[in-house]
Image 1 (cartoon, rainbow over the protein chains, first blue to last red):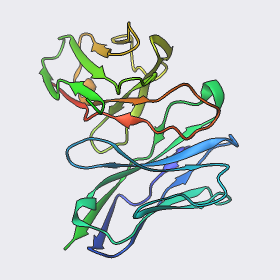
Image 2: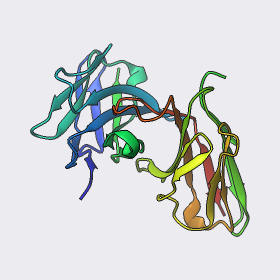
Image 3: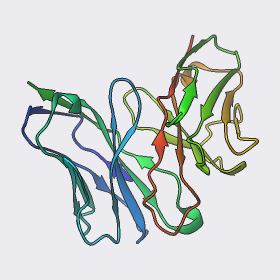
Image 4: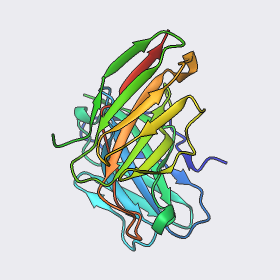
Length: 117
Length: 118
């Protein structure tokens, strides 16, 4: 089974509008962290936002927020007031466990976001 | 520099040749990771170092792949007798420290090396 599922291969949004990118995850470990990364065409992976499994509140970082629904195992990224520079591939990733087992990221297949002027 | 630096940015090699990819992590970062990203896919884990110790190499696809970090800083990923299926972007990432019992330390990525095997 896929650990991270991103069901939207591509999304389009008008500039200045909000957009939600979907991510569902699969783990039996009670301790985990969820990350979103942005990958522009230049190739660099840019860290956007993090949500821990024990966090009580949804994470926010500027125009990015994470809609964390633990029971549904979903961690959707919301981008408000989209800008042309937001056009990129977006990856959801998970790290499972804590202590010595807590290191590698498992990524989804990504969603290509295009912001239209 | 301030970020993770990878070189070369692009590498073209003929099938059967050996290649070496370099990663210079953020200064002071203890943890270093290598990932392989095939075209149109998300990155996949290859190997992990904590300082100079390679703690996990479970993602290396074959014994043709070898990684080292001898002084706990710069790392090299070597691929011997390259095959066409090795063509991918190889990403290096680093993070600040040991696992602290939380899951929240982000990994900071370099721009990657795009490897093409002819």
